[in-house]
Image (tube, rainbow, N blue to C red):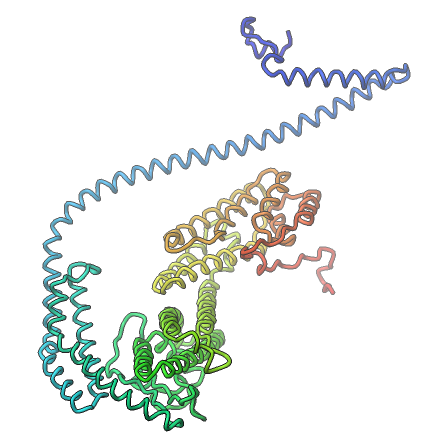
Length: 635
């Protein structure tokens, strides 16, 4: 009985079993090993003079066995340390889950108590709704009293064939009706509750004369259009005025809209062939007050006001409606002109954005740039509103006439996309400008000890993300994702500067721990944005824990596997980036460095389709020339 059998059996014969019965493969392998050893020994020691070297063979095999045992022990020890670290993490997670569970129980009890208190607020809510309805009724009384007189006056204007004035009065009546319906909708109980059928019927009956006026005005307008159809062929050089039938005297102020002055959006005359008069500058390029050409510096605020203006949308719709009363050909020419002018407006707006960005970079501290970011975000939202108007006009245009009036049909959607991309780029430039004062403090010794300036970076990010939440989708999600990418790229850029090089295993542990804490702060800041849109295929924040684990690894021999996984997940990482990471660890031998470089040269995976690089734009500082004398300059 061997010593191993005695230890396994615990000294009890009935419990002892041969190893071969428990693992038959072990016995078979042992037999094969013994046979191979005997065969080798019989071949080596077949002659007497070989027996003199028996001690040398025995010593060499003993050293080889000891080396194998040492490597096995090292590997097992490394895995055991990893398991121990994992168990510590699980124990910590369990403790945190217990704390969270306790907090949830407390919150549940408090919510139950608060629900009982909310019941007493129902009566107060009813009183508030009644008060809002009363305020709406009082504010609309002057309009309601003047509706009947307005209807009679509009009828008189129609009968006297003063159609433009009648149309303006009719537009005012329709606007009053819409305002009243909107106010009733807002005071119906909750913010988005539907309007009751009784209120709807009451308003419709009160404004019943408006529908009759629409029919009467349409009949009169149809007669005028019939006469114009007969007159236009006889006078081919006659131009049709492009001024809208209705130019509302008042403008509505709403969130995200800036109402331009009256007459600022009046289009030029339209020729019978669909072109512009000679020498006539395109619309939207003149100053509202003087009619002079606007310079690039004045264009930013003007375009921000006009892009999403409801007045602009209504003007285009009215022009198209009036042109359709004359004929489809004139309707298509009007739409074509409107699309050309929208494309011109968006191109000029993009140029104004470029000039504004240059001026901002030249003088960042100028007081007039106080609301620079707000103007950019408002212009992005207004571009999204304008996109719907462009698509509506394109749908109204007949397909056969889309390219009849010009060899190059207008493409305002492409111009709009370029303008939005430029505005989003300027928003990210502003974010980087606000983060810049705190970025040099990252990955330094003070940062390792105190944790600064990560909270300040998070504060700046939080302020920007709060402003981004006011932007209309899908640009809202785009800005939030771009802010995430920018923060991660700047963080990795700071790491690649080698401001902090580890001197011991404790330094590596602290560096990895601080990087993980920073990652948690960034995740808490962005976690509220995950459900607002489709998540990107690669989350940039996932890179920080990977780099932290690379620094934390205790066994340098395992770095080859870490580099292989890092290159597979981020194929744009270069040899220079990996060498900087090895320098930051401070414990990597030259052999391991050569092995890592060989691995990167052999793998070198191509960038997959749709992959967004992270390391490509991050430059690595040039290596220091150790052989240069301090007093001399390297060539």
